[in-house]
Amino acid sequence: MLKTLRLTTLAAFLALGIAACSDDVTEPEGTGFSPAEQQALINALTSSGALANSPAAGFAALVVGTLGEVGTISASQTAAMDRIVENGIQLAVSAALSSTYEGAVGVQIGYDIDGTQGWFIGVVGWNGLSTETNSVSQLVSIYHFDTDTGTPPATHSTTIGLDGLQQALPRSDADHHLATATYWNGIDTYWGTNGSVNFSGSSFSGSNDCSQLTFSCTYSTGSMSGTFEFESAILQGELTWTQVPVGFSNLPAVKLMISDS
Image 1 (cartoon, rainbow, N blue to C red):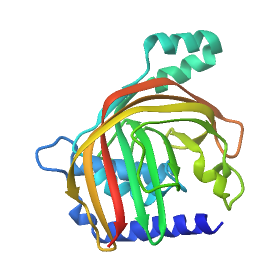
Image 2: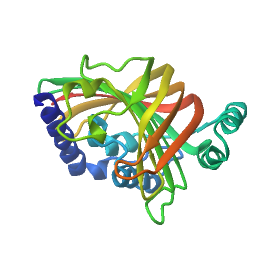
Image 3: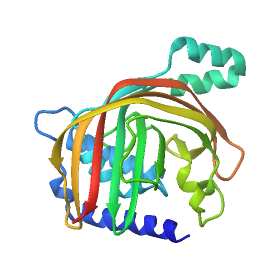
């Protein structure tokens, strides 16, 4: 319970610092992901609650503000077809919607603030990014965070399952060691009930300052590779949604290291 409270406070603390300096988070010079696109993605992450109850919720604006480019993630046609045959026509509709995401980025975060340390590793993908409405039509996220160290792992594999995020709060300490997957269709957020994710490789280089009023920060850019798939459901009701197997290779990624000022 104490650890949960400290993580929630940490996210709020960072969000305040980022908001105070939001005008300073701009598109890196000479790159292709514009400030308007960044803002649309930030709004979508907030509206969907995709990163809720994770430390990355407080880092979202900072992460997106450091993006110079984004990539794509897509399903193997063979894998998608195998799953369609196996699960029937219902999945065929789902596969058509989720086999490719036109935008995607990998994220790694390590932090040690106010005596709380932890790490986050994940991928966010989207379709239908609109700078006119500051929104996306679809958003997928899959991530794992833990509090055993302040350094994110270069590779990581784990399973996805229901945790306290989908049940009654407060969350138990054990929930900090489970992976989470979400899908948002612009209206409802679906939370992963089972599945798997494999972050098979990552590489980062360089060091850039991203410090804010309330904390010190450096970021480096690089790439991540891996695969994921999951089944999900809304928190209240009987609607379900299936993410067909997708893979990403050399996906543009950013790594943040955050500490006390």
